[in-house]
Picture 1: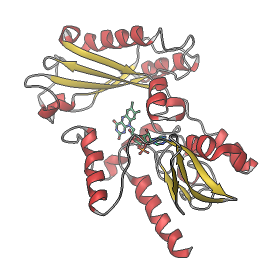
Picture 2: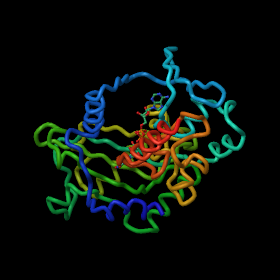
Picture 3: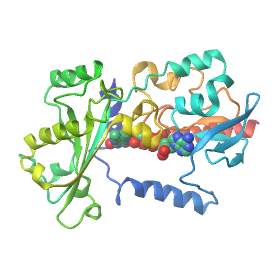
Amino acid sequence: FGYLYRRLGDVYGFKGPAVVEGGMGALGNALATSAMDRGVDIQTKARVGKINLSLDKVTGVTLTTGEDFRAKIVVSNADPKSTLEKLVGFKNLETGVVRRVSNIRMRGSAAKLHLALNGMPNFGGLTESQKGQRLLIAPSMNYIEQAFNSAKYGEYSNAPVLDISIPSVHDPSLAPAGAHVLSAIVQYAPHDLKGGWDSAREPFKNLVIERINQYAPGIKEQIVQSELLTPEDLEGEFNMTGGHWHHGEISLDQIMMMRPFPGASQYATSVSGLFLCGAGAHPGGGVMGLAGKNAAKEIIKWGKAA
Ligand SMILES: Cc1cc2nc3c(=O)[nH]c(=O)nc-3n(C[C@H](O)[C@H](O)[C@H](O)COP(=O)(O)OP(=O)(O)OC[C@H]3O[C@@H](n4cnc5c(N)ncnc54)[C@H](O)[C@@H]3O)c2cc1C
């Protein structure tokens, strides 16, 4: 199902990687500029600690600094568990909703490797244009299954599946002249690693680099800087429950009218005025903005009816 989901883009004519000029941050900046041009006030580095209610209606949010904002509508792209369990609080929700939210599967198993390189890595047999494509190290279905097996037992894969891209091929502004940046989605790396990630992060990073080195000999010597983000790091940095990159597994029972859970699939929650608009809502993760667009339409409808 995951494979078919990922191929959906083909239906709409998207081929190969889409690289944002200036890096992914440039997309956020463009959206923010456009919103501010229309009078939106944006605060960054402002963590919401609580979503406030009066009975079953939303009344605003309180930041972790204690600052209060009153609002009739609150729209959250934090994941559904963060939003409903941590920010609203289970004690404010019906038992049925609590059960459904608790049952959302969101155990992250994808890590992210970033490498700054002093030159183009030497992946054998690639044409110039192929160097800018997504490079998959997943030689067979059996290999993928074995890579996943380890995660089932709380271990990281010794031979991981790698989804590599070199965005600086498309956008030279991402690295100094002649240098490159490489990023790889690394599967599988379970959030709840046996023994914890503190002592395992560095060995796993080295294992992944060794693996890439088998396909791009000499890359180890080209590395200027490296960083591996585990699901635990993603959870800590971005408040994603379980460090799941799509705010919840994308599987048949967690998509469409069952995403994030039955009863909340139209972006509205059981709390009047509280909407979900992120990857945890239908149609799921990926930088495509569809959950946000659909949520905006529902909020406009709700506003007209209210
Ligand atoms: C390792 C990795 C690789 C990926 N690769 C790709 C890819 O190649 N292509 C692709 O299309 N997608 C990819 N994705 C998925 C994509 O990044 C997500 O689906 C997308 O970012 C989801 O957008 P979002 O706005 O719903 O949530 P997020 O991008 O997670 O944004 C939620 C924001 O809310 C903030 N937040 C959370 N809680 C609070 C709070 N209490 N107060 C204030 N702010 C809060 C977080 O800090 C975060 O900035 C990847 C994700 C990961 C983790």
